Each structure stands twice: as C-alpha cells, then as structure tokens.
Image (tube, rainbow, N blue to C red; front, side, top):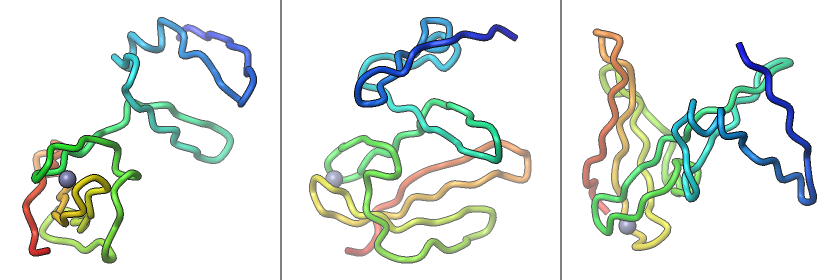
Length: 110
Ligand SMILES: [Zn+2]
C-alpha cells in the first residue's frame, strides 16, 4: 500500500497527489468526502445528487434537509430542498438485499 506525504499549506489546503486522484477518479470541480473515524480519516469520492427539477448537482450536504429522514423498505429517504430552484424532492439511498448500493430521486410534493 503506497504512502504519500503532502504538506498542509495556507488555509489548510492540501494537494491531492496524482496517485490519489487516479485511485478516486476525481478531477477539478469534483468533491471528496472526509470520513472521520477514531484515529483515522478515509477520503472517498463524494456522491452527488442531482435536482430532478433544475438539474443542479452537488453533494448531499449542499441540499437542505426539510424533515427528519425516514425508512422505506431498505432505503433511507431524505426530503431535500434544492438550493438553486427551491423545489423539494425525495432522495432514496440504501443497500439492496443483493448488497448493491441503490440511490434515486423522486419528485415529492412541495
Ligand atoms: Zn433544483
């Protein structure tokens, strides 16, 4: 497992080394998610969600959660509000019985 060291610069900026960019297949404009667990940090390519109304695409954190998430079958359902058009939709994500991660959006009642 290769170890790569990079320096923390002004504003705590860190360059993603080429090997890491390749491993995550991320480029300029993409998002990464830092998963902080006891004593370790994992960096993964961020999943993005696309507004079904206006096409705005961003990570989950950029959408406003308008009510507490709930469970539907094996999904967690989040009712989200788009920061660009203000419309509300449902984002379903979960692990299917086959083990496959499944996610999709539906237009909810506004
Ligand atoms: Zn939108």
